[in-house]
Image (cartoon, helix red, strand yellow):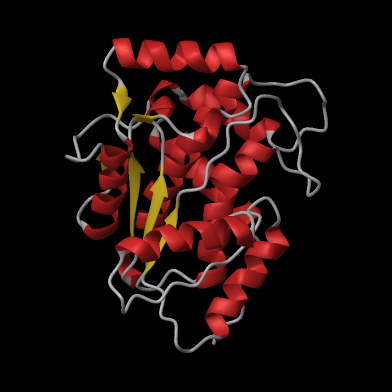
Length: 254
């Protein structure tokens, strides 16, 4: 699934070119800022008896260069990066699911105080940014680390597992809103310091998170063990509960 059906079809064509012939791919366009679109997509999957969902990978990410609110009342970076994942699980159910959230190395700079400030700011009506764009992004990724932690605690007895895949610093279009000079400087520093990760290495981290069901946090292709963030257990629990509240009502069982 991508934001538009055209984008989803383009990605599907790339996957199909490398996948075995018997792989079935269904492109779907869904705007993760829109709760109604997420609900509709999940409902379509739930009513299709030929589909059995075992793995949900939430790899969408935005890095907004300004603090802006969606028409549904949520800060955009938070809506896509942090709230959409719980909404997907709410719509699809958690029993027997492996949930993988693609994180970011930036969240390791997020403290418990900052993540609490982020939660308070998500629904503020002020036009003045309460956080810098970088802080808003890192908090949204920290929230997914906390959510995966809380989800394992809540649903681990239902065959549910969760992992955060941290691919490292990969050159993607996520910073497309940055000024060209800033983006160029960012990449130059990343290369000089050796922090820039090949896209294939980042993809390998996500695949490891998908299929190594013992893993709970994967950094890079080798799954290095790193400290995910500086948030305490109480803050992680608050974030999990906050995102669960935002995810909306549970759909009726089928």
